[in-house]
Image (cartoon, rainbow, N blue to C red; front, side):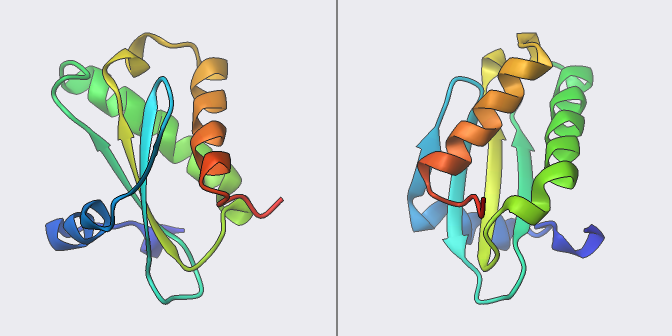
Length: 111
């Protein structure tokens, strides 16, 4: 799971420019094909979310959800999850539902 994160700005920009977007109340998801047999993930929380403590809190939540559910996510794509402003005020149940809804909207769940 360690090698499957997007790290470079150019990788993020390639996914953003693909324009395959879906959103929910707390998360926006960008996807692009990556021609690999495994998914790669990027997590972004802008300064609109809040201070560094809040941004790291949201990133930890997303990483937790990705660790638990990476086997259910369709391989061969790059995914960038962008946290929205209200994400730090949500409870985990609502945040989790938002996570699954953006994936299902793009038909990226295996099960």
